[in-house]
Image 1 (cartoon, rainbow, N blue to C red):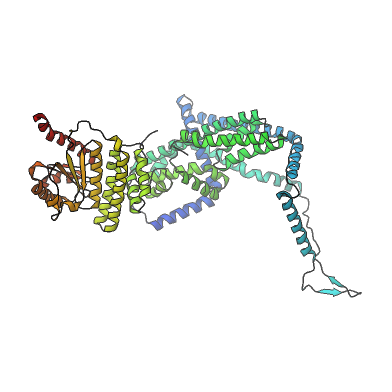
Image 2: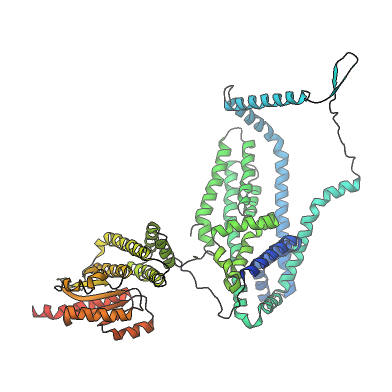
Amino acid sequence: MANGATSPPRARPARISPAAPRMSPLTLVALIVVAVAALYLGRDIFVPLALAILLSFALAPIVVRLRRWGLGRMPSVLAVVFLVFVAIAAFGGVVATQIVDLADNLPIYEMNLRGKIRELRSAGSEDGIVARTSDMMRDLSKELEAVTDEPAEGIEGRAGDEGEIDVTRPVPVEVHAPEPSPLEALRQMVGPLLGPVTTAGLVLVFVIFILLQREDLRDRLIRLAGSGDVHRTTEALDDAAHRISRYLLMHLVINVLYGVPVGIGLYFIGVPNPLLWGLLATVLRFIPYIGPVVAALFPIALSFAVDPGWTMPLLTVALFLGLELFSNNLLEPWLYGSSTGLSSVAVLVAAVFWTMLWGPVGLLLSTPLTVCLVVLGRHVPQMQFLDVLLGNEPALPVEVKFYQRMLARDPDEATELAEDYLEDNALEDLYEEIITPALGFAERDRVARGIDRETTQAIAEDVIDIIDDLAAEDESAATEDDVPADRPSVLCIGARNALDEAAAAMLSHLLRRHGIGSTVLPSRAVSLKTLSRLERDGVMLVCLSYVNPAAQQHARRLVKRLRAHFGDRVEVMIGLWNAEAEARETATAIGADSVVPSLRQAVREIRGRLQEMTRPAASQN
């Protein structure tokens, strides 16, 4: 489903209690195996129970509304259940009537089918593919019959009176079952109906029981989960009920908006019994994947039988294709949204898993059951992997994904992530929220020797290339509001390594967007050997960029070095981009004119400082 201009979803922090007990992977796997085996072996009980729970989610709001209107608990439940089964009976009656009418008219369509078969047969000439295929199959059949009729080698024969060999041939034997007795015939006829009838009866009993004891069952679940964690259990139950109820409601709305056009379209096309096909399309779409296909096959096949030509079948196929495209690409994303909380892959995997476990009923229940698993993983720390595997929320924050792409030496995909983020966010947000934290991850891994010097250098170079590309595309966006005409220069220096230089490049780009002249320098430009060659003219402010906020000793030494080179006429700013509040407070003792924790604040303070520096000169002129 396609899902506005809203910021991309950020991964939600996991709700893990600090004191939550840990479960070993082996124990977890054993519990999963036992649970799956129990679900399979006890499917005769669990299937009706799951159907009853699903129906209770759909019917509970109606029961609550009737109780608020003054109807008692028992009358409300019985009234709702009675109305549901009346609706099912009415639906079955309409479908049965339509099927009888269709069966009465089937002999009329026989001639059209025969004509189409003759038409297809005549379409294949003697040299056509149909004729050649038929001749080949006929020849192969004759060859197989000839081989079967020949006496096999090694079969001993016996000599007759005239010396001929009498080959012993197998004698065909036919086994006929005796005619069943009336009791056996009745059992064979009624036997297949006992299973569905028994399941329906169990579902009815479970639905009434669940609706009558809904509050008591909820209290017992809370007691099982632990009465000391009432808030989390209540939140999980409410979350599951809300998601499943919304899913069922939206599914019903979508099915009706699909089935009504099917019936109307087939009526105008001329397909018989359009009411039947519209109702079946509405109901069968509750079954994922298979339901819509089955709903379309019957009217399409009937259109072939009804119309002597090909207009009606083609229009019928076009109708279903158009409705499927409209429903899947527009209607479902608009109505569903994120109501289920499942990823598209999880829906497919769940359909396969539950179908293998419980058959067609499992396919029908696959989405609601998987929603319950996701809610369980969202609120139970030990089951958090279910939310990660099946949920629709991003498994990784965008900044972690960006760093992973850079670490995997895939700058193209990292660029795509940045461009996607820029569709709904400002450039400052990209630098501040995505790239700067990613550089912090790289610096952390570098310090921990998780990545080597070459990888660190490659990540920094790729990030700088992305910044250069964005700067080239952003040249027309530069403004000169509140900026002096002489455009004073700012030196953005990567203080220690290439990662710091990449952060300095981001600051330089943001300054140039505001019309402030800036230059990016690597760390070697301020080393003891090369600092004397650093140009002093035109420089009014120096910003030392640090991705690692713990480099305060290094910053103190470098500030002294810059003071000795530039004197007091140049201000020195320290950018500690990933610093916590405590680190920023400690960093004020390193001797710099200012310390900033973010690129946005650095741009704001640099603009203000430069305006103050140039205002006296402008007033003298």
